[in-house]
Amino acid sequence: MDGTKERRGGRLSSALFDQTLPCPGKTASKSSITLTFIGGSNAFGEALPPHFQFSTTAKTVERQQLNATVQDHFKHVLGQWGLSDGPEWMPVTVGMNEKGGMDADEFEKYIKNSIVPLYSDTAADKPGQRVLIKVDSGPGRMNFEMLARLRNLGFYLYPGVPNTTSVSQETDQNYGMWNY
Image (tube, rainbow, N blue to C red; front, side, top):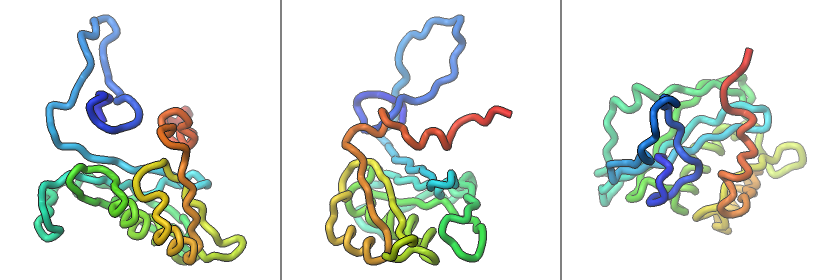
């Protein structure tokens, strides 16, 4: 998240600074703890509920812990998505693994538990009801068993070209400062 080359990530971090002062160096993380943030939007510009992937040293799911006060800072997201009963507030989702990144298992859990429920009322493998999920490249994107299960539900996964997320930034038009 801090833009250093030592860790995975996309864009450089944003930093506030005084332009009258010299920039002595690049900021760097002083911690070995990493996390991955996943955000996105649908074609209508509705924000998808964010997902945070934390690192953990726990060897079993039962031993994984997250400070309960962290959730006090998470905001729910209001959206219609593919829900037939009208707009609904959906929570931020959280995952954990050793590196705090999206491996194949965590990616499949994210799609199954965070994305599919948003369209469960309307998605089907029929014309006019299919849902295209455009994602970056990475582990698990070509998991044929997962792709088959998703297709049966009406979800088609479309992975992007490797290592181009920070270049194409095609969904950035839905984010940023609003000028009124």
